[in-house]
Image 1: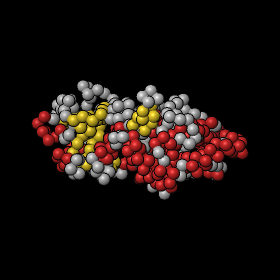
Image 2 (image 1 turned 180 degrees about the vertical axis):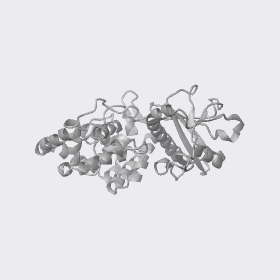
Image 3 (image 1 turned 135 degrees about the vertical axis):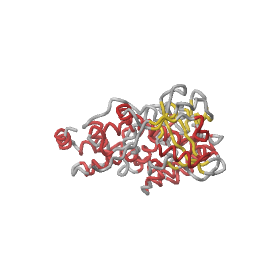
Image 4 (image 1 turned 45 degrees about the vertical axis):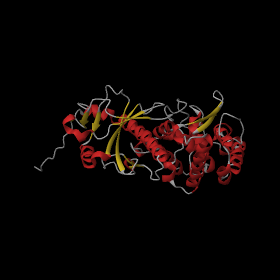
Length: 388
């Protein structure tokens, strides 16, 4: 970050001009929020929600994407991000996998309930409920920033958040477990730490980043932000032998790939969480999966979920961009011990191509139940040195 350039740009930022430019857009935002109150959303029908049938500020999805585009873009990609939309080509409603409850009307009831729950969570600063919402991340962010513009930053692409965090020298505040909600807060905290910017409307800060300093990133949208559905398969369609290694040797090899593996792993866990949430809904199980890795990465598994009989299952997620024919996974000693502890309840889910529109999840089960068929290659050694 060029501190001198940043400070000079802050001083030259014309807040009065910004407010003048966005006066009409702010009125549109207020009109939207006044129209789509919680009570209105609870009773609105599917045609007031879906994009594709009509172009109007009184259509929920159309207004958020187009009428209020100046308050943060969610254009690009597929209308699948809305969960349900109307296809002119098919002359019918299209329902994404996560919201398919049979008929469009029945599916919309569940989605409508999720909208209400998200807005209430946003008002109450209930971050856990916001995280657990089934709504797609970018769409979820736009809704929150629209209803609560002084609470939630109007930057919805995680790639853009990463760009600004890097350009403002805030990388040290990010770990492999930092999610999109926390990344927004990192930028909000940066804004609040500056005596001048902290007095600006929060959206003015977003406008400043995109248009003044450091400027818009080159990419126009996130790649793989939304996936249509995850195909779930069971069974060993890959050979178990020689596929599992305990993390370790080759310091250069492992460390050089650690960052990219962490990002791939985060995406894989996101895909599995979405799948497990949908699975439990379909099974009418009221319990929800928990992404334990966000709270404690020493448990030996990433996600706690439930089987059809509601018994817990402990899921370790491994992600790869390789095909099923040439991949291998790394396993820590702690994960191996956890697999031995939980037996049939331990599952390794391998997510192939987690950034693709249709990632594949392989339930590998617990391959250590038949230890004679598993080739473990020790590649990491723990050494204790005695005092001299």
